[in-house]
Image (cartoon, rainbow, N blue to C red):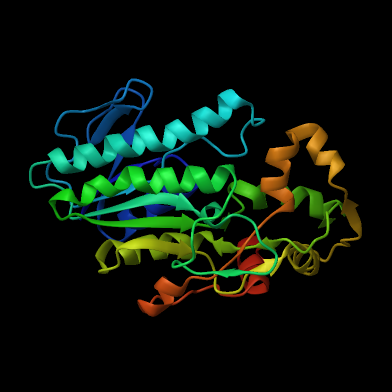
Length: 297
C-alpha cells in the first residue's frame, strides 16, 4: 500500500513509518518543509496542501497537531491546539475528496480526552463526549475529518491514550525521575491512566488500515491503572522507591492550573472495546510486562 502520513516525524509517526517499511508498504510523509521526492507538502497556517496530494494514495494516517503539553495553556496556545487539528484535518479531508484514484481509508488522530475526566466511569467508544477543553478539541477534531466520507472513504478516529515509549512522550520524561527515586503518587493517585505500548499503538493502526472498522476506536491497552498503581509498577520494574508525593500546587505553579490538571491530576478509564471486538490481539496488555519490555527489564 501507498500510505500518506501527517505527523510522520513524531513519536507515533516515526515508529509507524518504520513498521510500514518493514512490512513492505510505501509510507509517504506529509511535511511542512519543502517536500523532497516521495513527500507531500502542506502548511496548516497557510491552509494549503499540494495539488493532487493524495492521487494514487491507498490510505492516509493523519497524526499531526500541536503538542498538548508543549506550552502553558494561554488563550493563544489553546487556539493553536484547536486550529492545528481542525484546520489541518479539514485540509486532509478535502484533499481526500478531491483525489483521483484516492484513499480508501482515512485514519484520523484523536484522543481519549474526548471522554472528559472521571474517577468512576468506564468509557468505551459508545460513551458520550465529556466536558472540558480537551473534550471540545477532540469532538471538533473528529468532526473535521467526517467530510472525507463523502466519496465512500472509510474513516476511523484514533482515540489514543498515553503512548509508552522510551523514545519520547511521558515515559521518557518519567524514567530519570524514577531512577533517582523521585517517582511516586501525584495528587490523590486515584486518577486513571489509560496507556498503550508503542508497539501495540502501531500494530493497531496497521490493523485498522485493512479492517472494516469505521468511527471511533480507542487505542488503549485493556488494563488501565490508577496513577498510584502506575507509580508502584514503575518502581517495581526499575527497583526504585516510589515514596515521593507530588502535591497539586507544585506542577500548577510551573504548568498552570488547567494544563497541570489535564496532564497529571485528571484521567479516564478507557477500554478498547472496538479493537478487541475486531479481533485485535494486544502484545502488551498489562503494564508490568509492557514496562519491562520497554525498559529492558
